[in-house]
Length: 186
Ligand SMILES: CC(C)(COP(=O)(O)OP(=O)(O)OC[C@H]1O[C@@H](n2cnc3c(N)ncnc32)[C@H](O)[C@@H]1OP(=O)(O)O)[C@@H](O)C(=O)NCCC(=O)NCCS
Image (cartoon, rainbow, N blue to C red; front, side):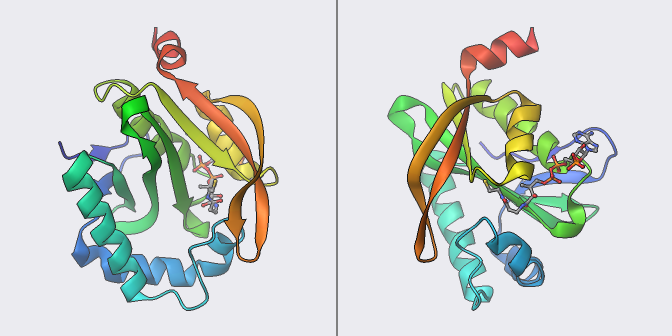
């Protein structure tokens, strides 16, 4: 099933699956925001270019076709402003983690909070997932605030869980279970 979602609120925000013709927009936004993104993400490398965007999109399409994984661009009135994807999915455990990013200029307006809520509603609702994780570097206050605002619960710190360049860094782990989500929607 394809997932395309218009966020409520100030209108004009849409989540839609990556398509190869979006590679130029993706490259442009990521290159323009590289320093902002590379603070907490390892993939926006100094040489990031169209081939990297295309490889990501093709992999997202394959994973969507094979197993229904979600990897979505976030668009504001037709302009790409971010992305949100399922990562490290273990289908047998009905468990996944969300990765996300926004262009610097799209921050501060609740776009990611609403995007995460929409994806969580889809995964813990119709798609029958049991557990969704958000893992952020402890000093990534903005990402941790997204998890907390949506109602994810803090579980602790996984030490040296992520390789960022030549360093291993810790992850603050937040999770929402299907039962937490049901309780919050009652
Ligand atoms: C992490 C990241 C997506 C968070 O972006 P963000 O803009 O802070 O998050 P949101 O879009 O949910 O916006 C929240 C802000 O909008 C405000 N806001 C305005 N309207 C809002 C609404 N309707 N709902 C929620 N928040 C709203 C909030 O108060 C908050 O502002 P504050 O930061 O001044 O407290 C962004 O900082 C980013 O891309 N960072 C680099 C990549 C990264 O770290 N990715 C995550 C790796 S784990």
